[in-house]
Amino acid sequence: MTVTYTVTGMSCGHCESAVTKEVSTLPGVTDIQADAKSGLLTIAAEGPLDDEAVRAAVDEAGYELVGRTA
View 1: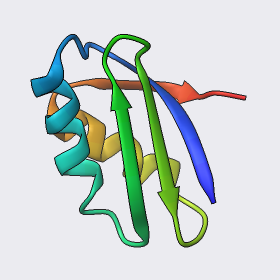
View 2: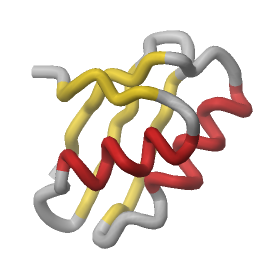
View 3: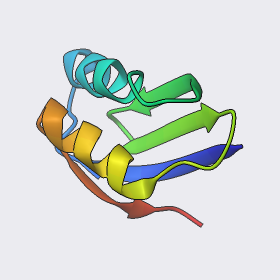
View 4: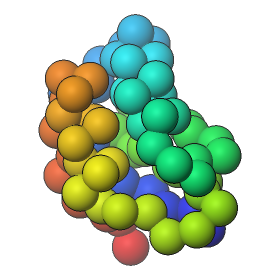
């Protein structure tokens, strides 16, 4: 299952790394692509993702998850 979220506040590679590091700790996550330029965070996981857990991980990294993209 792959889900894409919109994240605000990312502006560089360090931002991408910080978000990736926090989100990678979530259970079942197999791949993460954080793109500061577009503000998109794409997560591949073995099963459904808990949006609130993703939000908490992004918050922990210092950024804001705005929501899922369609």
